Length: 551
Image (cartoon, rainbow, N blue to C red; front, side, top):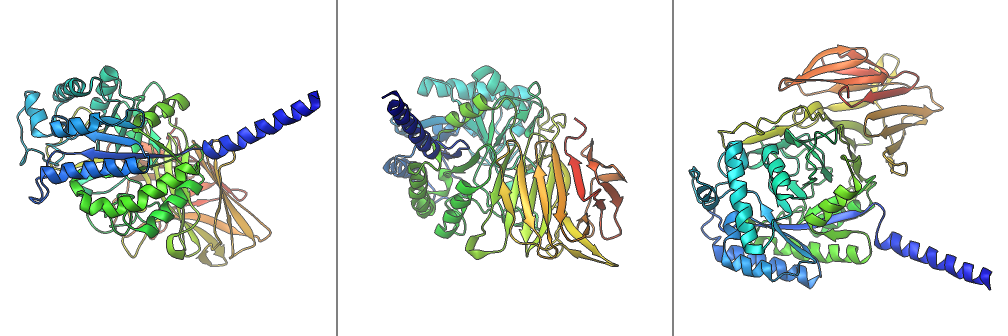
């Protein structure tokens, strides 16, 4: 009898474990549906306050229809509007969150005792409609007014405050005084709408430096303990390159208003498939939703495509649909410092031949892109919590703003359409050099803290193995063919580069008065020819790069 009971108990435990692994993945795929709300849209007379309000009503209706909760973030003018107050108060708090959208309209600025400098009652320029246009003392006044009035309306302070960008001083103040638990900023972009955020922690979330809200911190003491989630769900293959040789990027994201991306059934199905199947290491994240300024007519089709798919994935246990507050609390519970994560793509849309891997840690990010059967390291940026943002204490006086990290490889800014920058894998054969060619890469995140990639070669009998952990980037060759290979950085002609010195064991650089280095613990750097910047020659078929900027 005891043996039978034990057997039954064991079967029940296994059954429960299987259900748990299906319904609550150990490495969760988190979806936040975030809609932020403005009261008015001065750029188009046809977009009236009624049109904007109707948009939010329809968003709520469709989310309820699919039993999908989410987060609504209120700009101050919408916060003070009775219609939005009544609508949002009616939402069940166990599945919907009301938070703050940190753009600064005229009523908020004037109530804080400051002069309005905008062209319209809401002005999207960085020196008017965002905290970067105000001194630290003025920012605190603005935050105090918003928080006081938010609490007067809803009875509590918001736990999530998002924006295209928030300066470090404001973020610290919101955390210390009002105990926010989550924030969000724009995906990486260059020049779009006058806002540049370039080189940061790609996707997922990170703890920012206390002196730079865009820069991931390396230490617990120097971080603001509010996770910043990256918005909008970028196309991991194509968003990066769009707009090369222009002054601003286009947008290829999950936003439902874009007909070739978030408004395309083919693209959305492809993106969500890669999202749930990606080797992401710790967790994967994406944000759905849209600001009401685009209007319901423009986003309706995209919502009708996306929400049933997200609901289906939720019901299958493949995604967790949460509010930003819930995701922020989960992140803080699980991570004392920013974790290493990844987003990998094993299948291109429409049978294309691209594959990619994004890797992030608190020390660096990198992107690998496979195109036409060859591999290019398209991006490497180092992170340093001591690199200050000019906006932490300074004020922008222009309608644009820019946030950067420390570039080592920049396949966007250092490229031209016909000359794509990056580190390529070169094979030497006598006096000639050719690109290594291979089949599809195989991604693995089974070993905690590491993204492993195996790239089987077709040009040689062997395999390139790549391993990324939070501090290091390892490359090695394994095979029966004798292979003389190296890595080479090439950029387009005429690019302004940060490099100051190439020595056998490191490359020194300087960017916006910050000195930093890419260090090799295995393999040697060589100065490049006129066509290349530097080369890395392996030692015993291995190259190991230290990505911590001396930390």
